[in-house]
Image (cartoon, rainbow, N blue to C red; front, side, top):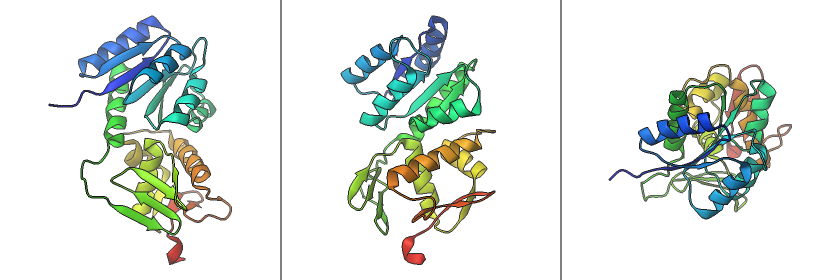
Length: 233
């Protein structure tokens, strides 16, 4: 029997909330709704969710605060919704720990497609055999979906883990931002190349990788990024 994935939908606009919930349920997702940030956090504390669809502008507790609180406890995938279309607003959402960002008005079908892509990327490998890659102090447990630096586990979002494993698979290979957007986000994300910059910034901060003197993640100016294995330097 196919596993039913549980989604927390946080949206204070009734029409949007009901339309999105209907589309998700039509795709056989279980949906729990919340109308403000505090209710969202209460629901998150009660049960496990496989993904959160989170409006940024919420009463009582803002979507930004909800995102920060959830990300401090879990790497559950988060899609943020907002009426703000400026690039900086999208970057802020991603820096808060969101995995994706959708601007209102949007098509519920597009949201469902992004939900599907995020859930596909975040699903744990079913192969019981552990596959571990080591690059100096950095250890990537592919099957366990875990990352360690100097023996200490680092909490990464699904997108950050996917980006790191993508880059580290071919050390020395240069990936353009567009390549990384398409391969990591799993669909055409045209015009959002700067989201990769945001994910790289978050990765560097979590790994303790100084961009001015990097150990693993290198910027290739005007092109994109590459990963280096310290032992190959």
